[in-house]
Amino acid sequence: MALVKKIYLLLFIKLIFISGCSTGKLFYDFGDEMVSWQVDNYFNITSKQEEWIEERIRLHLNWHRNKELPRYKAFLIEVQNKSGDGLTMSELDEGYARLDQKRILTFETLLLDTASFLAGISPEQINFLEKKLIEDNQEMEENLESPEKLFRERQESFWEEMEDWFGDFSENQKAKINRLHSEWISGTVDPLVARLERRRESQLRFLKQLRLSQDKTELENWLRRSVINRSGEDNHARQARILRNKKRILQIDNLLTTEQRMHAIRELDEWIEILDSIIMDN
Image 1 (cartoon, rainbow, N blue to C red):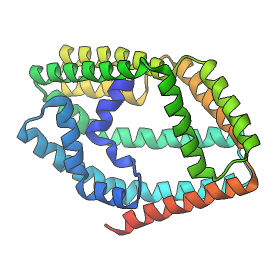
Image 2 (image 1 turned 90 degrees about the vertical axis):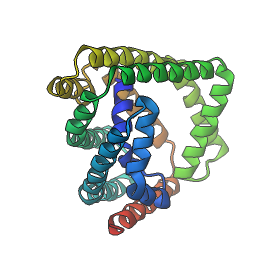
Image 3 (image 1 turned 180 degrees about the vertical axis):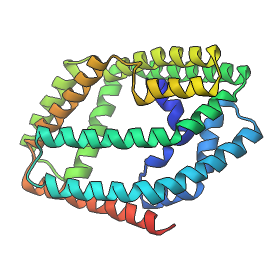
């Protein structure tokens, strides 16, 4: 349910992404305006809707800062303590499960307000949303027209992220990881193509539901099934994708040196400090 999640996140979930200390603090201070602006981009909201969204976002931001960020901090510290000697599949299973629990908790907390907002949108706003989604899809399709460029960009982005987390790599490591990366890409459907297909499918379901009924209770139940329980996506395919990603993480982990793992642990120190600063600045 890629599209449904995107709309859901645009409404209320932006608060869980922190890209840096100053950015994180700014979002917790001005996230109500940032989220309402993004929702307006998809729904062309009225001034009354804008005021309601900003009021509700402020409440959710306060909840998230006071209740969830301390839990995220504790989780990162636990990851630090367990990852210095490398990862195992059981540790990855546990980590994925706990992250999914956090996802479900946050979605459940935001569910009622999301359903309330969607129950109040007009037919014109649904049409506006549809046009915006078509534009997004067209832009994504244009990017897919240059596969070589996309491959280079993904390769560059991949290595930037790897070096940010683990520091420098030897030429031998780079060669092995590049081979793995090429195998991942060639051995599966292009992730952007697959993502576009899932987006289109979820868009149709989402728009159909909005036009079928705007009863708040029905929307709440539909969101719980589609977004929280992910019933719109084939469970076997989703589980296979998750397992594939876990195996890729372990392949990379097996190539890391002790110093590179320590570099990642030091990076987590910075994130823990970021969380601390946001929690304290309340």
